[in-house]
Image (cartoon, rainbow, N blue to C red; front, side, top):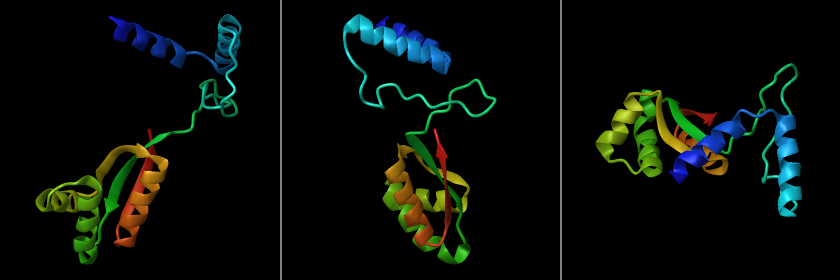
Length: 130
């Protein structure tokens, strides 16, 4: 029951406009006699020109193996195994089936490191913010 309530609250907050979120922040500060000093406490970014929806910077990223040249396949398979923990057969299937997601969710620093490793092995990888 508590989880349903939390999901409802999250859904409601997701639908609020930036100005309403700012008002809510101020009301909560006054009600609880606290200050939301850390900028991460309420992650709100000004909307793009002409848009009503708030734009938030992604904190989690998905890494996709875009393509792997045939002559670099062995090195790419090694990197995919290292990053995913897959066995040799499964990693080979991922590389041969590119484009394929190799890491579904990870922080920006880890995603950048994975992309560097994949590119160093001779393949191409892409990041997608979640």
